[in-house]
Picture (tube, each protein chain N blue to C red):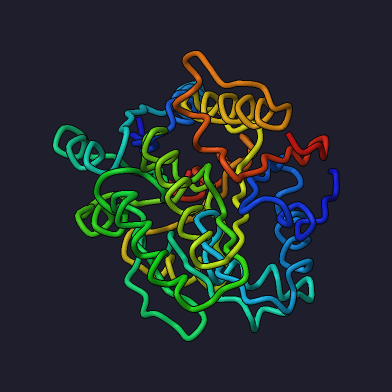
Length: 117
Length: 206
């Protein structure tokens, strides 16, 4: 069973994404911000991290630097240009940029692609 | 969406908080920038990156040469260098520092400050800090003879945010109707001094 870590400071987003992914058979753990995300990595080795860009605590760029073995997809309400997305996707581990609000089917489709399913 | 004439609204108020429905957000940004065309604008963006915002404005033929952008997002994900028309700012600072940084920038004789948006501040700061920040910023705007436009997303779900809007709308309404303030809402009423709150879903200035 693949494990996905959902990191978002909005409880509604965390709970909704967790519910959606668990229904599709994924093991889901959640974290409330970047620091919590790094702590969770000690107890789990997620295949994918869905990471919100705008969260309190450690800046996302510092969190990303410390993630070694998991793929990362940004899940963000912030809008960026296509050029910026391409730039971000060149960084190590970052594999996708998913815009909120997202379509559930599209989210699942993209996760399956990322996880080679 | 209701259209408003922002310059007219700001004839009698130092600043306006525009409650913008999510679905109209981009249209409102473009419309405001168009209405202020030719004026010197300091545009603080916490909702879109500098690059995305500039792209949107240019796509809609809005002249951006008089706009200096303050991007509060990009530094969260990388370390960009400042540009001629953009400063990259860290949002994870106290509201006091944020006010000081903006006060320094506003020495450049801007006609308008656009703050996009109050809603995004709720990620990093508490309601009381945000109220303090807005009032401080409006005082700075008054000193600099600059008008302020604050965007706020209508329908954003957060109990703090709902309370913030509810109290301030109610306080503004009391001011408009010249009713005496009182009760537990008194503290928050000072946030709305000189600030019009305009709900773009119905277009009425509250």
